[in-house]
Picture 1 (cartoon, rainbow, N blue to C red):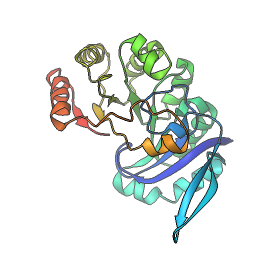
Picture 2 (picture 1 turned 90 degrees about the vertical axis):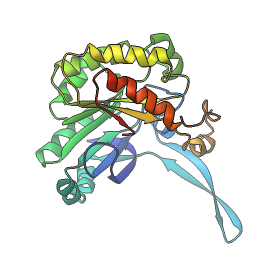
Picture 3 (picture 1 turned 60 degrees about the vertical axis):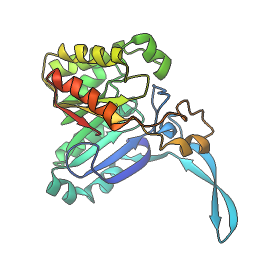
Picture 4 (picture 1 turned 135 degrees about the horizontal axis):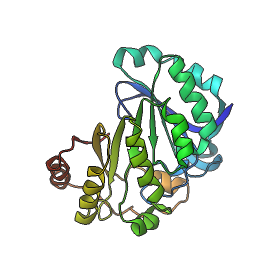
Length: 265
């Protein structure tokens, strides 16, 4: 079976335990205004022109973002790194985009990886039908789940979709007994407001099954060059990263509520 990916990141250390290979699948139903992988949103390959400077001369060439790969070809790539995964307690992480958008390809890869003894992690928004999530849950060792904004209207404004399905799926997944790390992007003035922090804490308290920890992901503007290259509007181009003191205060709020918290992924 073929899937559409746009990058393979080897020796990743922030996408789950140990040394990992992260596969970035193309396509996402969300359009987060702060997305650091804007090239992942369109499910189809995109062609851009990039300028290369060499010996004082500028050359323009075309670059295609996104390509099809078979599950067999991708497994061959993953098996090359298996020794590093095993020695470090790592594995493979499927990210995006939204991996659940390519459910059939993802399911095949998860099953094949586990059959080969490779630890599997899924980085997801959980914006999908529960029937899809339920079928792949048994082949996923760890879920990295985004919890972006608690207010539904604000969630729709900044991501383009309602958060109702996402919140319901988080609740179902914890009841299912799956191992989960909750990841909250720290977007200045959006997810960092006192209201959103308090609502996030109250929601997480309701979960029936304990999850691993909370990762607070600091906002950064390192994707600004991507937005220029892809001729996409960067809504947060003037925003700066939060100060360490601000992040520490929010981290303490979650810790005081009884959660294990880490800054960064």
